[in-house]
Image (tube, rainbow, N blue to C red; front, side):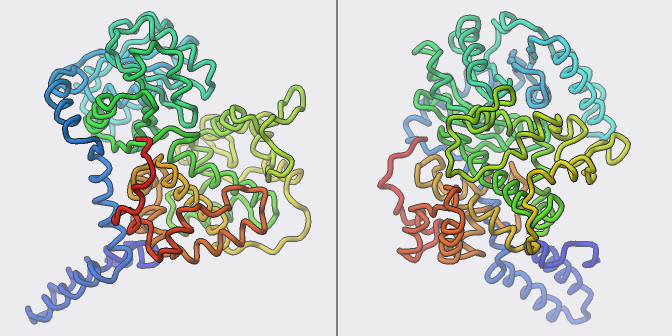
Length: 527
């Protein structure tokens, strides 16, 4: 039986211990069997890093769901709002709105329908709206086939799905979440209209993955801004468990508390985070995806070798597979909004890309010239065929192989080892996590771990990026490697070691200990 499950090297330490304990039941001597079982139990409790990682993940989720607000604010919310809000009331099917019928918007609509709400799905483009409705109906029918939903449930859900091309039809919604393209101008225009047409007490939310919440809130009336926050789902929204609850400067504590309860009601795991470019998850994934393309351009690694190295580490999918799943166009629009891409029409480089910045236009040109935006187009870093793996299995691409030649360093490079690939890609991700803590964007290291365990496929047996840094890499080793990479690649700021990391090393504590001892409380929280 043990051969059917992962070995210890691939996260199977606890599973193999459980199998050993079961096998002990067949030992003729009861006392010897109990001794073997006891030995495995204490091994997992005391000396197994994987056992510690799994327990860390379990308790981290529960800690993330707890409010950090003073008890009087929590009591006021419980007595005045929690019982009266139709969004939280059991059995209430109040109307909510979702703007944008793309992959994310349709997925969010599906989640809200499953949770008992009446959902109005809005998209100004008739074709996109029809496609979104078809996606929702197809997903419902698939859930019936898998026996996750009954036919009666699906019929009821379809009756509660409304669709429209006009924002004016959201006038009765108690909550509206926009999930349109990552463009500040478009989002602000939508919020300006929502400010006028929705009830004054309606909760307005943005599913933005990177944009400034405070700039968006600026178009709302002063009395409305407290009811505005980020509600960042992860793709595919009806599958992924994580939701980042993004707190802006004007977001009220009651709105945050309501969203924590509501996120739990829709059976998601909510993590409260502060407002910055990319918040927690996408801010940390930026060096991850940036370095993957730069490694590719260096010539010492391939799309396949990079993905395999990260999957060998334990990630559910490799970074190129992840990019194809999320949509390469999403990353392109984010870089465009940041002002670092070259305008395909004028040929001018974005104003925020400096001459010293390490950058490759490979990912940009793949989108603008070849239209390789990922699984939804049947082609991205990989090819996807409808008849193979339901269109989700990554296949080597002849077109990409030829396209890469113009961007990859032709100098004969020694193939990079998997461990080196992991260090080059994951160490800056962890370093960014330290910077996020330093800036009080996350309230504790375990919150970052929850984001990565449930939003990015981080292996649970490694506990999350911050746990991994503390317990497997070792902070002195992490610091030394980052210093080395920073000397070699000064054009990548994400290799510059965090001050918090340097403090932890100087004080000879882990980052978890740093927070447990209250050594972080000198800073002012943004949450």
